Image 1 (cartoon, one colour):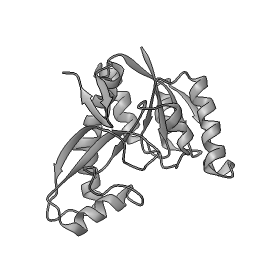
Image 2 (cartoon, helix red, strand yellow):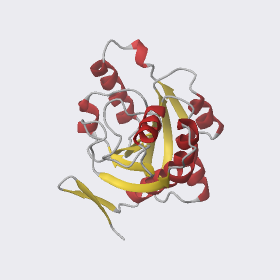
Image 3 (cartoon, one colour):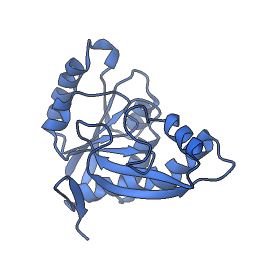
Length: 208
């Protein structure tokens, strides 16, 4: 049984999707053992506590730079014997020492179809604002491995979502979360825990 550590910063809707998937048996071979928040009072912590999951608060503001914060986070991940680390609305930039310590063992869900609308500055509502401004007809979500380069790691799963003409960024964000993020993130976590993902030449392959 693999230990899943989830990193959060806010409300924790993706965390809730993972908790629900674990309870329903959708996630095979792994369990959420710890939730780490970069912000005090994040509602995600309350979600974890309600479900009997250990929580740790490691506020970014208490550290002078990304490297100092990353070293502290790395110590906690090691203490928790993390097999898989999941970004679930984690909005803190980490030094590369973390992903170097856990190569192809850290995953993130991004609210667009990478390589579109990704990289520096593309997060939260900014992604959906850019999608609507461009006028694309399809958007979606991507689960990928985390590397030192933002949103550039091997892609694990993607799911497309239609863009409607009367969408606002908020409406589109909700549809992408409900129809894509909350579906493919738990699936990717289960695939990892089942040992069904392999990475070759910076591309991921799923054993069927």
